[in-house]
Image 1 (cartoon, helix red, strand yellow):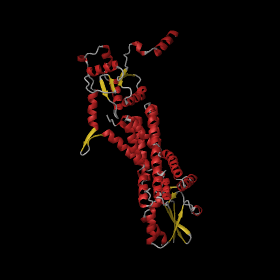
Image 2: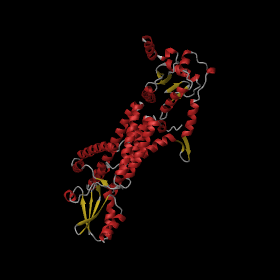
Image 3: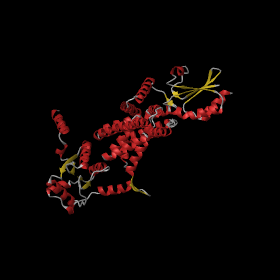
Image 4: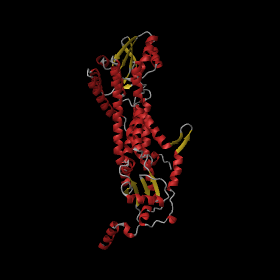
Length: 86
Length: 402
């Protein structure tokens, strides 16, 4: 399981979700990738992140299986992880 | 036929007063002193309302340098048993209003409106002509009504004592509207990026100075724009149709805010205008890394100016609506400044919280975006409410509910 988080340094919601993102990494074993919307522009474009940050992309066997965007709570993030991770 | 036409033309264009219509002119006498700041304020106020009443005539008497006028004022005071002295003194009918403060403008307007329907007697003229008879006078009940209304407008609150509800209402409006306005996310992202660059610096003094320069410049720009608008609004918004245009702007702004409430994402940061954002990010990096402190300071201040001009457009009319509220209530210049300052303080409160937390903890934090959506809803409600009241019940915005 791989989760890609696309965020930006200027985005308040991204800063807020840092805490839940770190918590998820502590509690579960998955490959975590962090991309910055401006710094990793070319890489980010490949994922068509849309216009709401942050974006969490859930990958299984190199296929996107789910995505969450906006200021998500730990519960939402965990629920999605458990749902697609099974 | 020609005779009939001639009669009609004469009938339509002949001054009505010729047919014996009573002169309904209401004369407002202002006794003022040259160089007295409150007198200057009242003169400015009277100039702004003069066109609003077609039958109002304003006569000004200077009393500090003109003994004759000073004597006349004494005579009028004696005739009407007025003990208060000083300038400006306004006389309308047998109503005497001494001084000019935050609520005097609306009181003068109420007096003018009172005499539109009640019996009006030109006391100053009668005193001048020597025809005034004290025993004959029929004292109007305008001041009694005002005193009663003043009592109703004040409330005793434990610890605080007597509180003027109008002042409290305007202060509350400044806090609420300023706070809602501050929640629009148009400029927050720039502050966050600036802080992230500042935190990376080793020079704490430079960090604090550049950050505070950004915030103080933002406050000054917003304040300058709001105070300038008040200056213009004082002169033009007494004209009803301009007030109506402001009301329509408020209604449109309200609808735009409502639309944003329904269409915007629940939470998160909206990515808009990639080109502009990248340009601003590059600018911030180059300003803050500039070896010359002065150039860095100028750069950051320049950025704050341009950001706040955009922010003003982004807030869709909330500051405009608030300044109109101040103008409608004829508050003094000092109070206008203080209310605007209060508005700005609450407008910037989220920015200040984020900045100070970052500076003290050296960690950047964001403010939750979960409630941004509701700021659109509240902003929309406030604007629509004020727009409707401006059109149909402007006196309610002056906190007169009778």
